[in-house]
Length: 161
Image 1 (cartoon, rainbow, N blue to C red):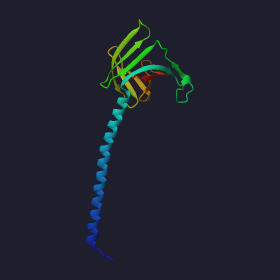
Image 2 (cartoon, rainbow, N blue to C red):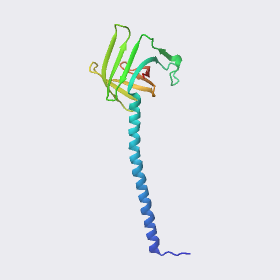
Image 3 (cartoon, one colour):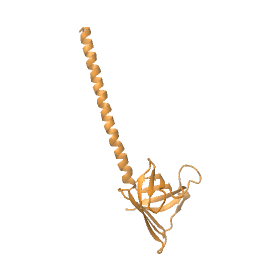
Image 4 (cartoon, rainbow, N blue to C red):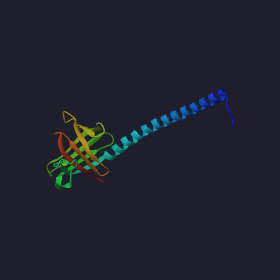
């Protein structure tokens, strides 16, 4: 059996301590750097999901208060009513409305994320910005509520191809 002197044990303990300190420092740096990339990816994914042209197909309210809006609680938009929301990656957007051949309007606005679950639309035609809370966002569907009248009525959009 090998016997170590006090100086040798002290030297080994210092080496182990320095090695552990180095490993923990390296892990801290790697986790710090990777967290920043994850946040950038989430922001990029969220922005790429929401940008595009969305066509209104229904609206609804959670009338039975079960936390979701079922198909029975949705009112589907008539075919002759067109409402399209376009959100561009540069923060610009348009709302196109066509309820009949004579009632066609286009409104331009600026938009930005407000926190994690809402977007804000600002237009020179409106005195105050309009906030829409995101109820659901996927690659093909957007559902939002709020708006000018701060309604609980959820608007359902499908992404145009």
